[in-house]
Image 1: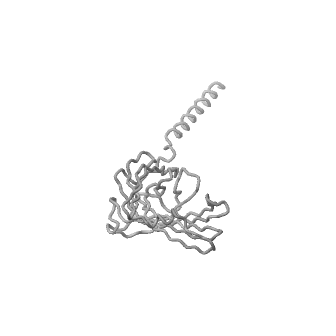
Image 2: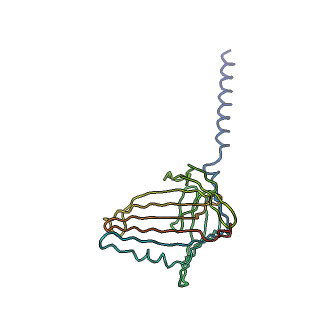
Image 3: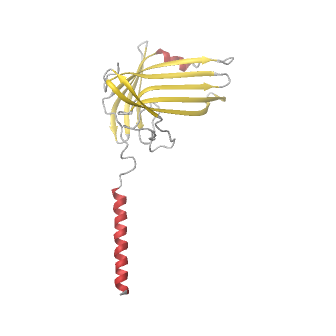
Length: 221
């Protein structure tokens, strides 16, 4: 009788172990439902403008910020998409005809990038979804809206960020940075960015605005 009970318990434990193992191995890997919404060959072109306000004594506008308003257009061309990673080239075209080209990448799962261009996000995020599900900053979709373009209406996600840091050129300067990002829901691609940086001692406000002006994915205007 004892042996039969023992055998029954062992069989039950084996069945439970196999069941748990099956649940584990059939779970989708982390981030498998996070996918880029862009594809190789997609092109997105932006206007870039800078606005400066100096309110403190002896304040001056950084030379590299003044270069922003010499921009004719700034273009992102998607070259490859593999898993979570998006690879692209950038062309910064100036009014005088000169250009600066770079190669960039963004992992839409972790949010990691190589500091060339970072505003590419997973496709089809909804309200309160994490912007970078595998990242650590906890930034979420704060709002959604509908934007009307030449080719029709498209849903747009909005996120806001705020951070504080010290100016690398002057440790005495505290910088409060307020970032507002609007990105296309279907592609995860930036459509409008406003980055407002408030510097202390002396007081300077530098605002950068980047707006999508054309694309081969949809007719913008």
